[in-house]
Length: 307
Image (cartoon, rainbow, N blue to C red; front, side):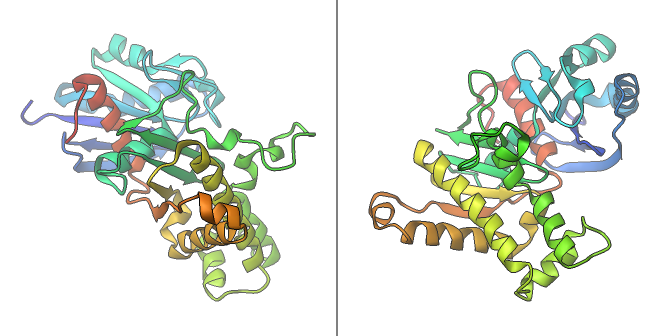
């Protein structure tokens, strides 16, 4: 094993991120390429990432959008990349490069990164909530990732939002109300920003308690606090970690905690019957899926891998 490493690839809607990582989770080198949206071009790009390192790899770890059968290695639906539907990347890689590989859903990969080396390390029961275009995540129960019977556990975006069961469009789901991207767009529109995706500028205004957009931000954090409460009512974990690009903003986690506190204190029964869980930011952001994908590969290969 000496001298060999693992290639980890995170398939995103815009970028393919990749890194060479050692068995302890230390990143040796990393980079990114634009994600092709046609299958043939996508596989060609995967080949370009693998070929230069083929002789020096233990294996390849992949994080992907969509519902992922981690046992068989098949991706279903593919999220924003529908060309991935029913693609078996481990079989493709084995046939072409004779290398072992694994694939896992991106939200679950982020949860595994936190379990392995992040803010869920040493936590038997916890959850990661990843805020982005939708709401992804992963559930850690009794020290292990809960995959679910149909590999859908932790797909928080698909929870119905309160009072929206009469309609059937995507706005009825938590993935819409809990979208960090849409919250930023709403705030940027109110501020008349030229770039409606500029979260950095939006958060500069939020840190100044801007009266025009702070209520939008509070409402958003209330949605996430209610989501945590509903998940907590079912699985009762010790800690939630909040990930995604906006989790770098301390004000986000602080406001989610405040909204959770207000939710409980607004109802005497909830105060008596429930215990507030810990809510913290994720330790990993841009590299979370790369690390979590590798952890899944090591679990596949070594079963009880822990360090």
